Image 1 (cartoon, rainbow, N blue to C red):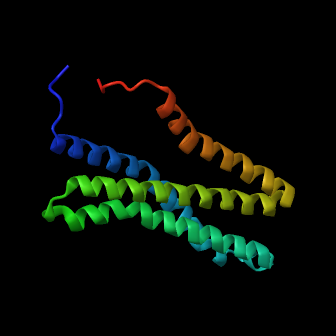
Image 2: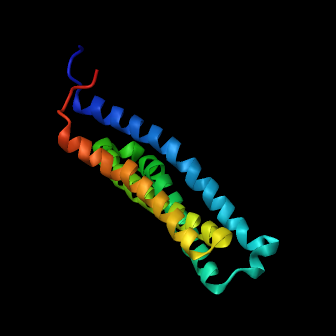
Image 3: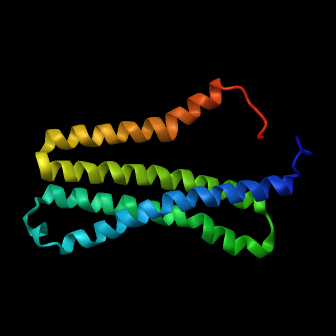
Length: 157
């Protein structure tokens, strides 16, 4: 086991880990946003109901917000880069990431609801969106919180 890391080494490591996590989440948000931006131009778009249009708009806004929030850590870091304060960058970027992932989860749930509504009606939409929402909630948020509270703290290997 090596020497304990310094505060600077810890900030460097945390920023690297955060940026790696963003590389996983951001493409999904960008692909969903790109698809949603093209949906109004599809030939069948004229046949959806007013409620479905509002659902699509809410999904578009949630996904756009998630894309902006998930990109924000990189921009924040770049603007702060020459001014130091990497600990602040990590703290703020962490919050951007959590807000962006929550917005992305909501956007995915609404997208699944809309697709379910178009495919099988309201009951299928509610069931599908509920299942996806519960899965995201459990795996993205509840499981890490429960594990953090119940698992003993271990030093990294």
